[in-house]
Structures are given as C-alpha cells and as structure tokens.
Length: 124
Image (cartoon, rainbow, N blue to C red):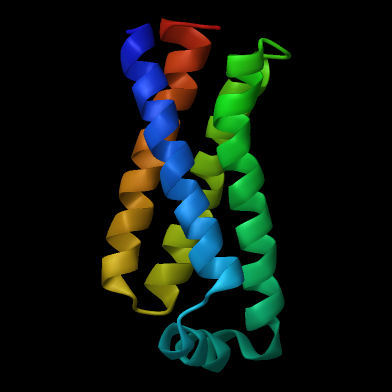
C-alpha cells in the first residue's frame, strides 16, 4: 500500500504543479474572461492565490515525506488540497465549467484517498 500511496503522491504533485503553472504563470485568456464576468476584478488575484496554494500543497505532498522532516505534513497537505479541490468544484459548477468540474472532482477524490491513506492505511 505504501508504494501505491507514493505513486499517487508523485502523480498528484506533478498535476498540482501543472495546475499552479496554468493558473499563475500562464492563465487561459478565454477562461479569464469568463471568470472576470463572474468574479469581477478579483479574478486575477484569486488565480494567483490559488496557484501559490496549489504549488505549496504539491510540494507538501513530496518534500516532508522524502526528506523525513515532519512527514505528518504530507497527510495534512493532501487533506488541505482535497478541501481546495472541493472549493474549486463549487467555483467551476457556479461558472458552468463542466469539464473542469469533473477534473476537480477527480482530484478531490484522489487527494482525499491520499490523506486517508497517509493517516490510516500507511502512515509515514
């Protein structure tokens, strides 16, 4: 089970790094226009905040466990990312963005399973 959880940690860390890149460094202008319609002037700062949180969460999935320093942070990072994905799911549903809603739902399920796995099934 530990091998499965490590593989999931690496996959999620890579995915969240790409999410941070697409939200923070290179946002899609079409999606930004739709988000600006719903969120107004707060769209760009919100995307920057999301990118920073997701990048730190992705690093939190790997670094504490790999370095052996505060490995319990890995489970917390997974749990907080699951919460962030729930919030993203709500936002995508409110913006009627069905493809991204599905991605948020899948990422929520994987992050929640990882948090459960690192707390209960195979703690570090």
